[in-house]
Image 1 (cartoon, rainbow, N blue to C red):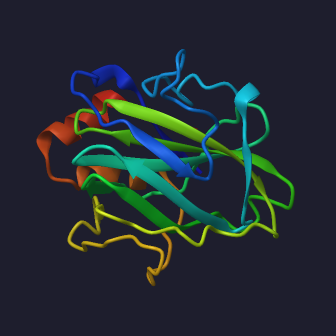
Image 2: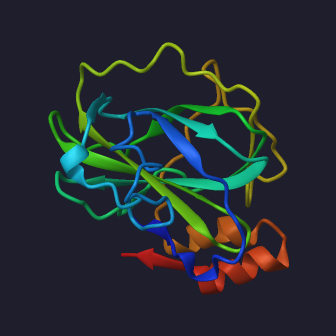
Image 3: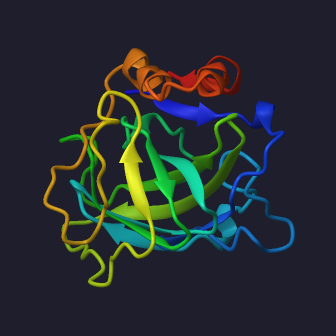
Length: 214
């Protein structure tokens, strides 16, 4: 498994800030001393950690978008203290338009990756077409007793897959019936998601602004 690490090397454009609503974020990344520009978790330490129970096979994520458009990706790290984000939960990157709430009703976790009681961290990354990235994290505990929120609903935001499925427009909502994406198995597949966007500036951002964590 590999995850995308979006470096702020091309941070010449302003990227929208956002809220991580569910699971509860590690801490307020708008507070003094924190900054969503700082990798990997906005400089919010685990001393302020709030752990949310999350299903063993994956669960919901809700993001409050504060800008007209952005790309997003979500990575997973297994472990208690600042784990490495080695699993990409969104191999097909998404472009979102609209200022509102985005509900992702189900992000699948590979079978056997997590067991009951394992601690982990979700890293949510939003970024612009030049690769300027913003980060938030949510600390979770995998549990068979976890219950997804009943109020997970998309409002004012449309998510469009970038890459091989770019022709398929989808609005992610709590009552979505499509299957959750399977986590990426290769570096090539992850990079192809970017290059498939068709924009030259985005392709350049892939080369200069991204690195892949093995």
